[in-house]
Structures are given as C-alpha cells and as structure tokens.
Amino acid sequence: MPVVVIGKRKLSTETDKGKSVKLIIATIKPFKLEEVREAVTAAGVHGMMVTEIKGFGSQSGHTEIYRGAEYAVNFVPKVKLEIVVPDSLADQVVETIAKTAKTGKIGDGKIFVLDVESALRVRTGETDGDAL
Image 1: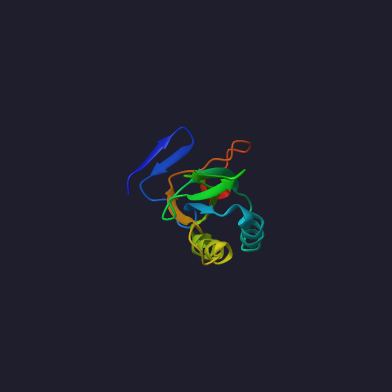
Image 2: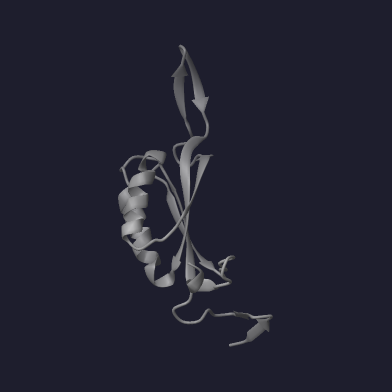
C-alpha cells in the first residue's frame, strides 16, 4: 500500500484499521430533531452539525392556504444532520436515525453514508478517529 508523508500527516490509500471514519448525512422532518438527537447520543455519538434546509423529493411540495388564498410551497422545510463517526459505529447510527425519524409518511427523509478521507481536530491536531 503506498504511503505518502507530508509534514506530520500520513496520507494513504487505505486508512489504518480502526481509524476509518464515516460521514452520515441525514435529512429529517424538523419536529423529529430532538428525538433523533437524544437517540444518536444514547448510541454513542458525541457531536453533530445541524442545518435548517428546504428541499423536495417525491412529495414535490404541497399547497397551503394563507388568508384565503391557496399557494404552492415548492420546497419543504427539513433539517440536515451531519455526523462523523468511527466506521464501527456507522451502521448502528444509521439504523437509529432511520428508526427514530420514521413517521411512515412521505417526506421522512434520506440518509447518506460517505467515507471520510481525513479528519483533523483544529485545537489539538488529532487526526481521523482521534479527532472525533
């Protein structure tokens, strides 16, 4: 396996065993945020980033009535969670989010899991799994 050292950072095509991390991106309904946060914290997650977003998928928006006038809402409010976890915890966190965020109705959201090439804790300089 080729390994390249740049300064103190080691870059390789494969991450050290036990050090690989995953980025979990989940879009959920806003009212489920606190419930999901509590569930993933109990599953071992130590932090997450939350962004209020708007989007559409299968439901393609909806119509609402405001002051007697009907209008189309093309983008539905959602919450995007970004969670970086050790590879060993990723499947459990995905299952926890899916189970907790599910209402059984259209628009429950999506979950994506990506490999993280590297991670760095700015304050200490810790990298990858240690940076979480």
